Length: 278
Image (cartoon, rainbow, N blue to C red; front, side, top):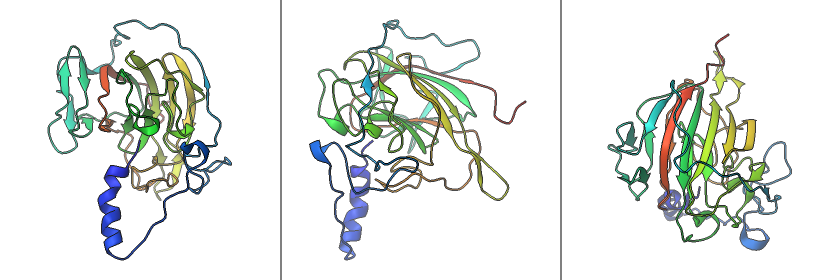
Protein backbone atom coordinates (compact mmCIF):
# COMPACT_ATOMS: atom_id res chain seq x y z
CA UNK A 1 0.00 0.00 0.00
CA UNK A 2 1.60 3.23 -1.12
CA UNK A 3 0.07 6.39 0.28
CA UNK A 4 2.06 8.95 -1.69
CA UNK A 5 -1.00 10.17 -3.58
CA UNK A 6 -2.96 10.62 -0.35
CA UNK A 7 -0.22 12.54 1.41
CA UNK A 8 0.95 14.77 -1.43
CA UNK A 9 -1.61 17.56 -0.74
CA UNK A 10 -0.69 17.50 2.95
CA UNK A 11 3.02 17.68 2.22
CA UNK A 12 2.54 20.52 -0.23
CA UNK A 13 0.54 22.53 2.29
CA UNK A 14 3.18 22.01 4.95
CA UNK A 15 5.92 23.05 2.56
CA UNK A 16 3.95 26.17 1.87
CA UNK A 17 3.98 26.86 5.60
CA UNK A 18 7.78 26.82 5.58
CA UNK A 19 8.36 23.25 6.78
CA UNK A 20 10.81 20.98 5.00
CA UNK A 21 11.20 17.23 4.82
CA UNK A 22 13.98 14.83 3.91
CA UNK A 23 12.93 11.67 2.10
CA UNK A 24 13.67 8.39 3.88
CA UNK A 25 16.88 6.80 2.61
CA UNK A 26 16.25 3.78 0.42
CA UNK A 27 18.27 0.64 1.03
CA UNK A 28 20.32 -1.24 -1.51
CA UNK A 29 18.29 -2.42 -4.49
CA UNK A 30 15.70 0.32 -3.85
CA UNK A 31 13.43 -2.18 -2.14
CA UNK A 32 12.71 -0.16 0.96
CA UNK A 33 13.99 2.23 3.59
CA UNK A 34 16.69 2.35 6.25
CA UNK A 35 15.85 5.37 8.40
CA UNK A 36 12.27 4.59 9.39
CA UNK A 37 11.45 3.43 12.96
CA UNK A 38 12.48 0.00 14.22
CA UNK A 39 9.52 -2.39 14.51
CA UNK A 40 9.19 -3.53 18.16
CA UNK A 41 10.49 -7.02 18.80
CA UNK A 42 12.66 -6.99 15.65
CA UNK A 43 15.89 -5.44 14.40
CA UNK A 44 14.21 -4.21 11.22
CA UNK A 45 12.94 -0.82 10.13
CA UNK A 46 9.43 -0.21 8.84
CA UNK A 47 9.62 -1.19 5.14
CA UNK A 48 13.19 -2.44 5.56
CA UNK A 49 14.56 -3.58 2.21
CA UNK A 50 17.27 -5.61 3.96
CA UNK A 51 14.75 -7.75 5.83
CA UNK A 52 15.00 -11.36 4.58
CA UNK A 53 12.67 -12.16 1.74
CA UNK A 54 10.17 -14.93 2.61
CA UNK A 55 11.04 -18.12 0.76
CA UNK A 56 8.84 -19.16 -2.12
CA UNK A 57 6.30 -21.97 -1.79
CA UNK A 58 4.42 -23.17 -4.86
CA UNK A 59 0.78 -23.56 -3.84
CA UNK A 60 -1.31 -26.49 -4.95
CA UNK A 61 -3.96 -26.28 -7.63
CA UNK A 62 -7.22 -24.62 -6.64
CA UNK A 63 -10.72 -25.00 -8.02
CA UNK A 64 -11.38 -22.76 -11.00
CA UNK A 65 -14.58 -21.44 -9.43
CA UNK A 66 -13.25 -20.98 -5.91
CA UNK A 67 -14.53 -22.12 -2.53
CA UNK A 68 -18.34 -22.22 -2.15
CA UNK A 69 -19.75 -20.33 0.81
CA UNK A 70 -20.79 -22.47 3.80
CA UNK A 71 -24.39 -22.43 5.00
CA UNK A 72 -23.84 -19.92 7.82
CA UNK A 73 -21.87 -17.44 5.71
CA UNK A 74 -22.94 -14.00 4.56
CA UNK A 75 -22.16 -13.74 0.85
CA UNK A 76 -20.66 -10.31 0.26
CA UNK A 77 -20.16 -10.68 -3.49
CA UNK A 78 -21.63 -13.37 -5.71
CA UNK A 79 -20.46 -11.93 -9.02
CA UNK A 80 -23.70 -10.09 -9.78
CA UNK A 81 -23.83 -6.74 -7.99
CA UNK A 82 -22.38 -4.52 -5.26
CA UNK A 83 -25.52 -4.38 -3.12
CA UNK A 84 -23.56 -5.35 0.03
CA UNK A 85 -20.97 -2.60 -0.52
CA UNK A 86 -20.69 1.17 -0.43
CA UNK A 87 -18.05 3.62 -1.53
CA UNK A 88 -16.08 5.74 0.89
CA UNK A 89 -18.12 8.71 -0.32
CA UNK A 90 -21.42 7.17 -1.33
CA UNK A 91 -22.33 4.50 -3.85
CA UNK A 92 -19.85 1.74 -4.73
CA UNK A 93 -18.86 2.33 -8.37
CA UNK A 94 -16.49 -0.50 -9.22
CA UNK A 95 -17.13 -2.32 -12.49
CA UNK A 96 -18.97 -5.66 -12.26
CA UNK A 97 -18.76 -8.13 -15.15
CA UNK A 98 -18.16 -11.81 -15.89
CA UNK A 99 -18.59 -12.76 -12.23
CA UNK A 100 -15.98 -10.40 -10.79
CA UNK A 101 -15.65 -6.81 -9.64
CA UNK A 102 -12.75 -4.64 -10.78
CA UNK A 103 -11.38 -1.50 -9.18
CA UNK A 104 -11.48 1.48 -11.50
CA UNK A 105 -10.08 4.50 -9.70
CA UNK A 106 -13.35 5.49 -8.03
CA UNK A 107 -12.04 4.81 -4.51
CA UNK A 108 -12.15 1.96 -2.05
CA UNK A 109 -15.36 0.12 -1.19
CA UNK A 110 -16.48 -1.22 2.17
CA UNK A 111 -19.21 -3.46 3.49
CA UNK A 112 -22.47 -1.87 4.56
CA UNK A 113 -22.68 -4.37 7.41
CA UNK A 114 -20.24 -4.71 10.31
CA UNK A 115 -18.94 -8.03 11.61
CA UNK A 116 -17.38 -9.14 14.90
CA UNK A 117 -14.62 -11.80 14.98
CA UNK A 118 -14.90 -13.55 11.62
CA UNK A 119 -13.63 -15.84 8.89
CA UNK A 120 -13.31 -14.09 5.54
CA UNK A 121 -12.81 -15.69 2.14
CA UNK A 122 -11.85 -13.48 -0.80
CA UNK A 123 -10.45 -14.30 -4.24
CA UNK A 124 -8.41 -11.87 -6.32
CA UNK A 125 -6.20 -11.58 -9.36
CA UNK A 126 -3.65 -9.05 -10.57
CA UNK A 127 -3.21 -7.71 -14.12
CA UNK A 128 -1.61 -9.89 -16.78
CA UNK A 129 0.74 -8.88 -18.26
CA UNK A 130 2.07 -7.35 -15.04
CA UNK A 131 2.48 -3.60 -14.82
CA UNK A 132 5.08 -1.71 -12.81
CA UNK A 133 7.37 -3.04 -10.11
CA UNK A 134 7.61 -3.07 -6.34
CA UNK A 135 4.59 -1.38 -4.73
CA UNK A 136 3.28 -0.34 -8.15
CA UNK A 137 2.75 -3.93 -9.26
CA UNK A 138 -0.88 -4.89 -8.75
CA UNK A 139 -1.41 -3.10 -5.43
CA UNK A 140 -4.55 -3.30 -3.29
CA UNK A 141 -5.36 -4.41 0.23
CA UNK A 142 -7.92 -5.95 2.56
CA UNK A 143 -8.51 -3.22 5.16
CA UNK A 144 -10.34 -4.24 8.32
CA UNK A 145 -12.15 -1.30 9.90
CA UNK A 146 -9.90 0.98 7.85
CA UNK A 147 -7.15 0.13 10.35
CA UNK A 148 -5.68 -3.36 9.96
CA UNK A 149 -4.39 -4.32 6.52
CA UNK A 150 -3.54 -7.57 4.79
CA UNK A 151 -1.64 -6.52 1.68
CA UNK A 152 -2.71 -7.51 -1.83
CA UNK A 153 0.14 -7.31 -4.35
CA UNK A 154 1.58 -9.12 -7.33
CA UNK A 155 4.53 -10.77 -5.57
CA UNK A 156 5.11 -13.53 -8.11
CA UNK A 157 8.82 -13.44 -8.99
CA UNK A 158 8.76 -9.79 -7.96
CA UNK A 159 10.45 -8.18 -4.97
CA UNK A 160 9.51 -5.32 -2.72
CA UNK A 161 10.18 -4.65 0.96
CA UNK A 162 9.04 -7.84 2.75
CA UNK A 163 6.54 -6.14 5.07
CA UNK A 164 4.76 -4.85 1.96
CA UNK A 165 4.52 -7.97 -0.19
CA UNK A 166 1.40 -10.07 -0.75
CA UNK A 167 -0.02 -11.28 2.53
CA UNK A 168 2.01 -8.94 4.74
CA UNK A 169 0.51 -7.13 7.69
CA UNK A 170 1.48 -3.93 5.97
CA UNK A 171 4.46 -2.16 7.52
CA UNK A 172 4.61 -4.66 10.39
CA UNK A 173 5.07 -8.35 9.61
CA UNK A 174 6.05 -10.13 6.37
CA UNK A 175 4.29 -13.37 5.48
CA UNK A 176 6.00 -16.57 6.59
CA UNK A 177 6.34 -17.59 2.92
CA UNK A 178 5.58 -16.26 -0.55
CA UNK A 179 2.73 -18.40 -1.91
CA UNK A 180 1.87 -16.14 -4.85
CA UNK A 181 0.54 -17.40 -8.15
CA UNK A 182 1.40 -15.82 -11.52
CA UNK A 183 -0.41 -12.63 -12.53
CA UNK A 184 -3.74 -13.32 -14.16
CA UNK A 185 -4.41 -16.45 -12.08
CA UNK A 186 -7.06 -16.40 -9.39
CA UNK A 187 -5.70 -16.46 -5.84
CA UNK A 188 -7.44 -16.81 -2.50
CA UNK A 189 -7.09 -15.38 0.98
CA UNK A 190 -8.74 -17.02 3.95
CA UNK A 191 -8.49 -14.58 6.85
CA UNK A 192 -9.49 -15.26 10.45
CA UNK A 193 -9.62 -11.96 12.31
CA UNK A 194 -10.20 -11.19 15.97
CA UNK A 195 -10.86 -7.59 16.95
CA UNK A 196 -8.91 -5.90 19.75
CA UNK A 197 -10.49 -5.36 23.14
CA UNK A 198 -10.04 -2.50 25.61
CA UNK A 199 -10.82 -2.13 29.29
CA UNK A 200 -12.97 0.61 30.81
CA UNK A 201 -9.92 2.91 31.06
CA UNK A 202 -9.12 2.56 27.35
CA UNK A 203 -6.16 0.19 27.77
CA UNK A 204 -5.74 -2.57 25.21
CA UNK A 205 -6.38 -5.92 26.89
CA UNK A 206 -6.22 -8.00 23.70
CA UNK A 207 -4.47 -6.95 20.51
CA UNK A 208 -6.09 -7.50 17.14
CA UNK A 209 -4.81 -10.73 15.66
CA UNK A 210 -5.12 -12.52 12.37
CA UNK A 211 -4.54 -15.90 10.75
CA UNK A 212 -4.01 -15.73 6.98
CA UNK A 213 -3.92 -18.52 4.42
CA UNK A 214 -2.86 -17.63 0.89
CA UNK A 215 -3.79 -20.23 -1.72
CA UNK A 216 -4.11 -22.74 1.11
CA UNK A 217 -0.70 -21.95 2.63
CA UNK A 218 -0.38 -20.42 6.12
CA UNK A 219 1.19 -16.95 6.07
CA UNK A 220 0.32 -15.90 9.66
CA UNK A 221 -1.11 -17.76 12.63
CA UNK A 222 -2.80 -15.61 15.27
CA UNK A 223 -0.29 -12.89 14.50
CA UNK A 224 -0.95 -9.74 16.51
CA UNK A 225 -1.11 -6.28 15.01
CA UNK A 226 0.97 -3.74 16.91
CA UNK A 227 -1.76 -1.23 16.07
CA UNK A 228 -3.17 0.32 12.92
CA UNK A 229 -1.03 -0.45 9.90
CA UNK A 230 1.22 2.04 8.16
CA UNK A 231 -0.51 5.07 6.70
CA UNK A 232 -4.05 4.26 7.90
CA UNK A 233 -6.06 4.46 11.11
CA UNK A 234 -4.33 7.66 12.20
CA UNK A 235 -0.80 6.31 11.69
CA UNK A 236 1.46 8.48 9.52
CA UNK A 237 3.12 6.94 6.48
CA UNK A 238 6.35 5.02 7.29
CA UNK A 239 5.55 5.14 11.02
CA UNK A 240 5.01 2.51 13.68
CA UNK A 241 1.53 1.15 14.18
CA UNK A 242 -0.41 2.18 17.26
CA UNK A 243 -3.85 1.70 18.77
CA UNK A 244 -6.02 4.77 18.87
CA UNK A 245 -9.39 5.21 20.51
CA UNK A 246 -11.29 2.01 21.39
CA UNK A 247 -13.74 0.72 18.80
CA UNK A 248 -16.44 -1.97 19.00
CA UNK A 249 -15.58 -5.56 17.98
CA UNK A 250 -17.93 -5.17 15.01
CA UNK A 251 -15.93 -3.86 12.04
CA UNK A 252 -16.29 -3.18 8.32
CA UNK A 253 -14.30 -4.92 5.60
CA UNK A 254 -12.80 -2.70 2.91
CA UNK A 255 -11.19 -3.39 -0.45
CA UNK A 256 -8.61 -0.75 -1.26
CA UNK A 257 -8.53 1.00 -4.62
CA UNK A 258 -4.90 1.69 -5.42
CA UNK A 259 -5.35 2.69 -9.07
CA UNK A 260 -4.49 -0.79 -10.29
CA UNK A 261 -7.17 -2.93 -12.00
CA UNK A 262 -7.29 -5.69 -9.37
CA UNK A 263 -10.24 -8.03 -9.70
CA UNK A 264 -12.15 -9.66 -6.84
CA UNK A 265 -14.74 -12.44 -6.75
CA UNK A 266 -16.41 -14.99 -4.44
CA UNK A 267 -16.30 -13.03 -1.17
CA UNK A 268 -18.02 -14.35 1.93
CA UNK A 269 -17.72 -13.96 5.68
CA UNK A 270 -18.92 -16.02 8.62
CA UNK A 271 -18.81 -15.58 12.41
CA UNK A 272 -16.32 -17.64 14.36
CA UNK A 273 -17.90 -17.22 17.78
CA UNK A 274 -16.43 -14.51 19.88
CA UNK A 275 -13.59 -13.81 22.21
CA UNK A 276 -16.20 -12.75 24.76
CA UNK A 277 -18.21 -15.96 24.45
CA UNK A 278 -17.63 -19.08 26.61
